[in-house]
Image 1 (tube, rainbow, N blue to C red):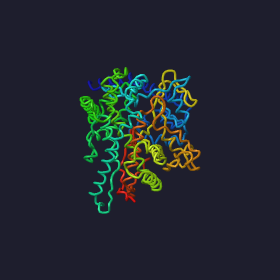
Image 2: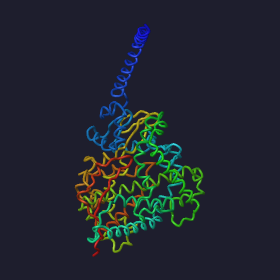
Image 3: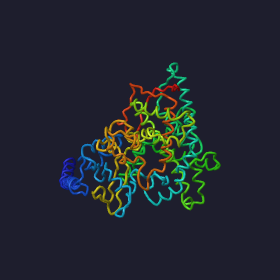
Length: 520
């Protein structure tokens, strides 16, 4: 009887709850259906083309981001759907020149769009800095303090440091040749990714904190350098959290302890070295901190707190090493796979200077083919190729004739524009001649839209380090080509377009046969 009674109880309970469960399922299905119909057909962005599943839910976007294929996936969709596509329910990607003006410049009708907090946001417990702040007034205040460290005059004072580390790199490469198995043949096979990372990290360490990390001296990565390079993927994963603002704290706690520790170590290392640097304000080199400290009478200086300075310096270490190193690696990779262009660069460098000491910043600015090589390298190997991200503020905005509602995420997709035949003749080829001055440029490139790419940004948030970065790129490429003959290792070629991307390109080893140049 007890068993029968229990059965009847559960049967009665089931008969009472079944309609409720059925109703809940029906309501859920109805919600999914109405949300789908609204998102695809009634949403303010519904008229924009794009892959249907991406337009419906953020999940495919996040999956692509986590896999490191977001850049190539969106490039593929732009090729299929056009220059303006919807890549998520509330995100639009632009690959159109007019978008530069509508997104990044203020006009009488609307202000420039603010940075997207999804990727421009400091980690928990870390102060805002020049890169992560989404507030224009904070950015202006910080730029007034930090900006003088990146003027042409400041970069000229920093030349002795950069040149010194190029000299050290050349010496260490010669030692590598002498030690290598090919040494008897006067050559060595080296991974230029390591060498470019070592050089950029030593330079940015000296100019940011007044002390080198000795990567070149020891020909190995400093633990902090390894930490920085490994943290780039973490930054992409951290960006995912911002799409779920109510859950970001929970998701952050769910990240592996190793990743959270990595992030904390980077900022604590920066704080420690900054305080050490402040104990010796008489640094013999004109590093960034010297310039900042020289502005104590600047009313804006007192408004920049020490946590803000620490956070900004930590980001300078990241941006000043990884981005330049990636551009150098990408450009060298293009040169060794295009021997004709490499020979042109060799001829220009080796014919314009009688001795290596003549290779100065001011002299390098005047070399048309060297500067064309750098511009072409930035076109094909932009280190930050994931799109320049902004968000539509209250009231909405009009971009390229389309009204975008408040909260829409906006991406300026430079990779798509760089790889478009509509903008560049033979767009997939490395052809620096397209960037030569008008009187030297071949006729086949006369219709190239060279102004459509702005690798240093545009508007009030344009990269402060443009002159600094250009000087680095010029001096490293010029003196490498002056001192060495470079050649690709044929069975170890790298296809740059196939590399994964997490905020910046995740580089694979680029093997180069290098031997001392035979000076005539």
